[in-house]
Structure formats: structure tokens, C-alpha cells
Length: 499
Image (cartoon, rainbow, N blue to C red):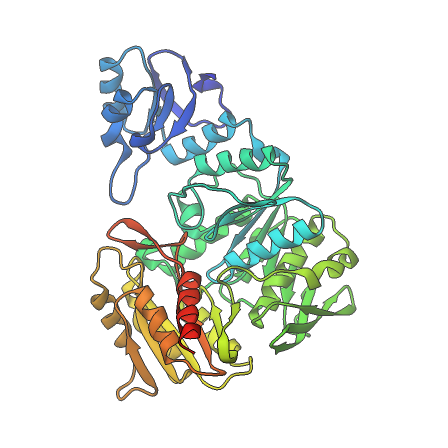
């Protein structure tokens, strides 16, 4: 494709050197991925700066270089006069708008749903994905559990755990269109919003689940975290807002001046959608859904009372997308479980294993409360410290779980550059001494899962909280493949063979 940078809509160019038009066959922000006729963006990172890799990008065949360091860009332009160079105010913003242009703005043909919140992003986005597909609205998914089209998972290496960088997002959008998808449900993290990964995307619906302290290793203050999340609601056409959340709902409602629906579990809240009278059982949950002064009974094969709220948010999204409530209610009994989100696995001797991504103190406390509603003898729960997150949160995980299970297994997720024992010790600091329950430690996620399973007996519940990102554990910068489900299957198969 021949591209004239000055003609790209909203492209924030301030200076240009070399040919005004260049041939662009791909877009990259990683110099090692650059091939012939590639446009290379010098994206600044937390640990490095893309400007340091211009020489490598040129050697690999880049035809166009976009950066924000005018002095450095000018020097390289003089060295390579046959290449196109551009200076922009914000490289991430420029990457977003050029990616949209390069892929022929696939977002214009998709109904786009963005979900933000501290807890429940993956579950809610997946509920939207599943609900839309059940309703005949072919939908894709972008989030922590991967890239999924209406026909299943799409192999795609994500450079970030939750929301991809903008060039990847628009490439995925284009792939969805090619496969016939008409909508996309995606998780939109606070970091992604702050880093302009969704810049220029006009969401059809923005969903708010909740907010609590998280990602302070990046944001430094809760105020910055909150303001980052609010950005989503400044680039949307409609919104679904959880008014039970005191941390953010008021701020969102002050921003939105477009159609929106509120949801709550409180009967007298005045919300547009109210879920109430929730009951849990081994077959799922029942609740009443109230909308426009009428109530309907809902029975879904899903678990966790808080997931009634997440499902209600998805229902609100379908309503704002023009679907009638009667059509929505008709398909709810077919809703599948979400991978790793209160996912129930049945084992021998009536043991049940619950996989749940709860990785914040608030989420962990909620899931521990909910799992107890399932029939069981003893509860064994695995909790973790996450080495790539804020260390101050780790003792809070212990406090959130203390006294709420018969056995607590403490291990580490994604130790990153830390020794696992350092992370585990940070968690253990949150317990009172002597411990209120048996505490077992394990220096890897695999050992932790096995320890929890080994502690279990007939009719027991095993909760495995937190979990892998993209099916891996992050250790010293490497993604090491990991699957709780594979370990569970391996363990139960070995147990069965012993009988």
C-alpha cells in the first residue's frame, strides 16, 4: 500500500523527512518483527524506548519510521534519505490512527462493546460474546483468555495480558470481519486506556462493572487509575453502569450525555435493570430480572451471585444494541460457563474444583463467599501473590481469605523477576498468628494446584483462585506454558488408577 502520512485522518504529524509517500506492507512496534516495507513505530515502553531500535528496524527492511524524538529522527533521516521519517507528538496515538487507516477502518463495520472494571471484565465481556452469538449476532472476543471469533479461538500472540496494543486490535478487527463476525466484545484495561491502545475507537457500548484498588504498581495513585478508566466513557455512544459500585458509578454518570442503562441488585435503587432474589445451587443460579416495571424469572447454568450482576450488564448491552428482552430471555438457559471464571469441574468422589481468576482482595473475598453456597464437606482454597503486580496488595489477599476455608494453599502466580519465596512471604504477612486454618505453601503454581488437590477428600470443594495469563506463567520475562485444567486431569487420572 502506498501511504502519504499527511493524509491519514487524525494522524498527529509535526515534522516529516524524506519521501512524502512510502510503500507500507505492515506495521510493527517490535523491531525484531520488522520485514521489508514495514512502518516502524518507536513506541516508548516502561523499560525501554523504541527509538533505540531504529537502526535494527532499518536493517530489517523498514520503509517508514515514526517517532517523537525530533532530533534523533532528523539524524536518521539524514543518514537514510530514501526512507520516510515522521515526527509525531504521541507515538501511541499515531500508531492507533495509522493502524485503523492501514486496515481500512474495520471498526466501522463492527458493533463494538468495551468492558472496564477492576473485577469481572473477562466474565462480562465473555457473557456479551456468548449472548450475542446465541442471539445470532456473530461476535468476536478480545481479552485475557485470548482472541476468539464466533467459530472459536484464533491463534494470535498477544504482547499484553488483556487489551492488545492498537495495531494488533485493528488487525484482529479485520480478521473478525473476514470470518463474518458483526460485533466484538473486548476487555479494556485502565493501562490500555492510559497508553492509548484504544485511541480512535468509538465504542457502541461501554460497560462498567466496578472499581477497587488495583494496578498501583503502574498508576501510582487510585485517582489516576480512576481517571484512566473514565476515558472509556468519553469515547462511547452508550453505556451500562453498575450503580451499586460507589467507587466509580457517580463519576461515569456525570460524564455520559448519551443513552445508558443502570443496573443494581437493590430493589429500591431506581436502576433500569434490577437483579434480585438470587439463589445458588449445584445446577446454577436463579434470580428475578426486573425491567420497565416488570419482573421475569431467570435460571442459568452459571455460578456465583456476583455473576448475576455481570450477566445483567450483558443483558443491558443487548438491549442497548436493539435486541428485545423476550429474545434475550429465551436464550439465557443456554449460556455456557466462562473459562476460568467460577468454572466448575467435577472430579471423582463428588469433589468439585472451581477455577476462578479472582486476583484482587475484593474478588477473592466474593468468590470464597460464593463457593460455600455449593454443597460440600470441606473447602480447600489456593490463593496467590502475583510477582508482576503491586506487592502491597499481597498481604491483603491473605486477610481476604483468612478463616474462610478449612485449608489455604499459598503459592505464586507470575513471579516475574522475583524469587517465588519472596512473593509467598509477602502474602503470609497478612495472616494472624497462630493461623486460623491450616496453611500450606508451594513455590510454583503447578505445585500449589497439586497441593490443594492432595488436601482434598470425598465431597470436598477445591477453589483455585488467580491463574494464568494466556495459558502461561510469566517467569523472568518468559511465558512458560501452564494449564490448571491439565494438572487437574492428570491428578484425578492418577488417583483413579490407584483404586
